[in-house]
Amino acid sequence: MTQTQQLRRLAAQSATAFLVAALCAFPLYIDKFSNLGVVKFTGICTVSWAFALWLGALAVVGAKPMPGRLPWKTDPGLGALGAVTASGVLSTVLSLSPAASFWGLGSYYGGCMMVLFTAAGYLAVRAFAPQKILNGLTFCVGVATAIVTVLYVLNIFNIDLIGTYADTAVVERAQFFSTLGQKNFCSGFMAFALPLVFYAFLVARGVRHTLFYGVPAFFGGLALAVVDAEGLTLGIGAAVLVLICQKNFTTRTLRRLAVIGAFFFFHAGWMQYMRTHVYTQGGKPMLAALGHVAQLGFTVCLTVWVVLRFALRGRELPLYKLGRALAAVIVLGAAVLTLLANFMPGFPSLGRLDDLLVFNDDWGTYRGTAWRITAESWLAQPVWRKLFGVGPGMMHTAVAQWAGADITERMRTFYAAHNEYLELLLTTGVAGLAAWLWFVIAHLRKAAHNWLRPGVAPVTLALVSYLAHAVISIRVSMIFPEIMLLFALLQVFCLPPEPEENSATAEKPVRYGKGKKTKSAEPVQQPGLLRQWLPPIVAGIAMMAVCGVVSRVIFGFLF
Image (cartoon, rainbow, N blue to C red; front, side, top):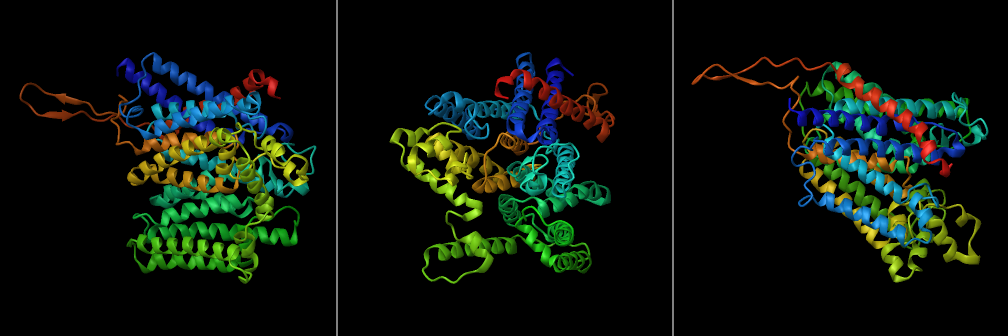
């Protein structure tokens, strides 16, 4: 193995540790609620810069990325990344308050600094992350998901193991705030984590792998039943619609989806019983309403599994045509009902569906108000601010200037638009929103052309879920860095298979003299899963812990 190959191998291991730290250890990085936003922002900022600078140093001394990893001249994704970064910097320079916009102090620490360190992390992962990483990484994400869910449920029942809410009204706010932070963090984390966890279970083969990924999927079903956020429902629903439209959607996939459905209805029924007989405080998730029909839902899912498992006798039948027809009916039906409910005079009430279909200031816990004042604030800006924005994190300031003396107490509560796209329009202007849409479309188009490559489908579904979730949620420093790393990982998975450079696993040809056939030497045995993944897991957790401490020194002025 040459020195370049050794450095590249070290870089690949470091990129793996970076992903473990950001996707698995960072969600469990807990602190007191009063400082949760700045603690998480400074923590992920420090760990991202640490890994990005380390991988950059390795590149300088000879760890060159594999060919095709960073084709600057031909890849639209890299051009879009440059546009996103440039628009973020420009809108910060032109901001109503450049200093506040740089750190995102006017909202949830989503300022220019987050644009810079997420771009650096994206490039580091895209350059050096190994292609054969998905299985182990997905399991690590599954473990983190299970822990997040258990802590969330414990907090619902006023069991606060770590004293995070010692000074707050835990019982009254338990469902609105989880032990790990705002519900926007929990719903955003679950929006990208659950598709990864569920897809691993959907495609698992054999008893061992099915159980291996089935346990995280079981806790994923619990998360769907307890996390109180409409955005999570929208995100998972969008991911399911994309999944059933793919040509690899078969009766086997539907059978596994029935198992996940059984997991969900089991937990929804249990939570319904607990709310009715044991605990009655806190919010109630949208999907939790299905707890009223949990027994019927569980029975239907079990029946579907039995029929597909035994009636077909192991055969797999394609269902993508039926899936596409069903998706079209759902999307078209939802669009028609929404238009009729909002614009047709005298349209009859649809009961509880009115809360979803009829848009007004009260929609989605007053999200309608946030959307209206964000849009009207943008329309009131001069042309040059319409193009370049009022600055990252300046939504609250811009709304206050627009409303003036007419500002209401409800308006004062919003420091974000609760819609990432509307907020980008106001804070970074048409240029910033266009750059982000270019970035998203460039990556999703590439994913669509490479859907069957290993790793592309689950990461794409995770991103689709987050992008749908973003329609009614907030871009926060607790989630967005992970999303940028997933975009980078998607690009890695879309590449053709790269040659193995590990001398411990590669087969080397041996020639036995002139004119004789070449014979392959016996391959060296691959390292075990534990031996392969234990070093990056330990390194990722250690780096997150160290960077958490160091961040308080580096960014002490923000606390």
